[in-house]
Length: 378
Image 1 (cartoon, helix red, strand yellow):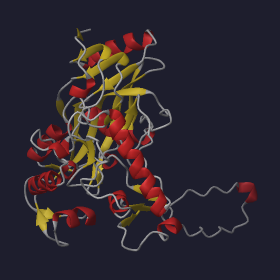
Image 2 (cartoon, one colour):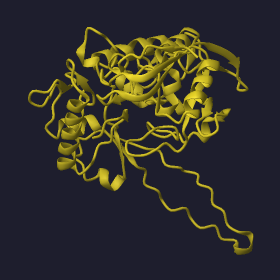
Image 3 (cartoon, rainbow, N blue to C red):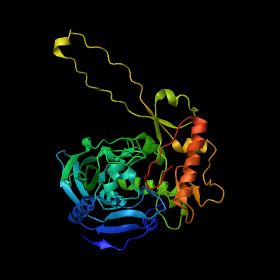
């Protein structure tokens, strides 16, 4: 088990906050990762698994526990039971964008709109990452994971992970514990074999983001290139020359609200319907069945509303910062809180609370943080 000299977490996270841990372990293989986690859990000490550090907001105090860095690599292509598809099994420490580049190079479709997202593959299901209408849940088959409670390794189908909008049963939500405490060892995706030819894009959100007309045909490589360019224009591609990228990406989630609440928001606020379950299972006990099947009640779908629009229209503009603070909103994207130069976690938290208060005051909605918060509170 390769124990290494602890590195301050501010050097390993994209928000550039966090003190040094008491202990640090680098796991380069799945066996090393399993051994390290079982050892840490047996000692009942605080622990943190670190991949790319792009979805973490960590407090300034030293971390009194062990950080296990997941550095496993590898992509294995496997056949799919579905004609026209292929499966990729990917180690948890593999860089997410490197996986997307590999898939696009192989002519595989399903994750190309998620190009440029920082972080590692093992973190992707925890967050159910997504962009421009694509979400991991659409292609995820299963994960191999190790449970903290037992130390057992198992393969879990995607359907058992509680995947939802930027969430899963594995995610540490702000103020609550995950439904299942486990660490992902590998991820298996099923992607369409489309090759390198041009084809029409079905998703309206992706077409809109890339300026495509309905029926206009492009290749997966074209989509990847243009998504990265779009993200770069928003400061959402890691670049040491651009301080707008010293962030955790979107700090606040787009809010999912009821249709009735959405109607209280200004009509100009961008919104997208969240597809309801149109085919719920109706069970009628045989002894009670009288030949009549009741009509299904009409269900009004929930609505996803733009957190960026709410922030800007609450009076907090791009580039905003509080007096004497080294934390600021990105100058390119109202959802990203950025570290403009040695900002403390306290300064970033203060800015986040201010934004939450402004949006709540103007629109009656409390925005929820998207990153995982460690030793810091809003």
